[in-house]
Image (cartoon, rainbow, N blue to C red):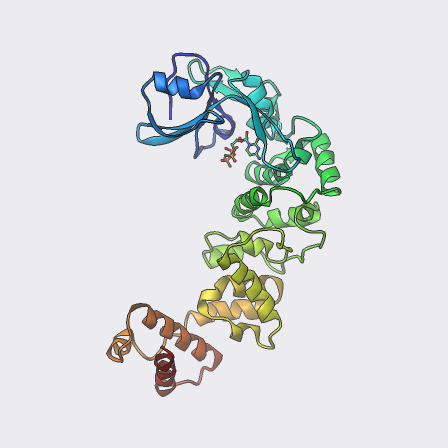
Length: 357
Ligand code: CTP
């Protein structure tokens, strides 16, 4: 998408410029204005969706698309590892570019002229496939950059430059756990949802797990990527991190259930018989880290079992909507556990289910 600008002070920045140089499509467009962007959009009668007055950013609707316009800003990290604080807006473009994570994300392109501003050598680093931070305290300020680096490295086939690699290792040997774990969680989700086996290999081998814990995670016994593809898991990050101590992250109820489910079934003599169909991610974790052979056999064959009883018959028996799905699932599980079950056995499962309603 091409924007228009008459000021010469509006710039495409960050990922969209990087992606254009790499000849890759970009989902988001980020632009920044060297000055006060709220004044800029007000003067041009753009449709404003939302403005954040303190840091002078504004969401604008252009041709039906929401675009984030930011004022150039300078930031500091009063507490290493926590969110940065904006100390100046409308600052020179260079200050805005050098507050960023890697040189490859610190390139700007003038909206008016198309001219590239690259004060830190980002274009060269893109060409030579290098991830380079701007200063030696970069990972201390924002340790999530280590995971962002892993993500960019996997997405684009880039490598950390030797000095950045040293800084990364130095940080990983001295992690400061007083950090923003919600930020770290977001980056971990982004990174592992790319669904690369190499992500976990490197996370373990390069010691990136130390951002979360000092305990070395268990390695997977099979390719997680192939499991994710076969069972069509849309957000697979927990499968990758299921053997890592995640106690420092704040997990949702569903995420905790998946992880605690693994702990629970590991204590059982018959782990697979403890799970219902809806606990597929827990079964997948057990499959990946404990027993690929049994787990895969179970997951592949469980689907093939069709109950003798039909949905129509269940309706006649007085069940409704979701109850039918639930009872079908129970029957399927029971049949998997005991292939000799017949229609009468299925009916007694239905009866028990109804008695509990
Ligand atoms: N950024 C940063 N440090 C972070 C997060 C973001 O410096 N911890 C900067 C980078 O310059 C980045 C921009 O903010 O380019 C936008 O961040 P984000 O949308 O997370 O990344 P993109 O580079 O746009 O990458 P993606 O293609 O994954 O959206």
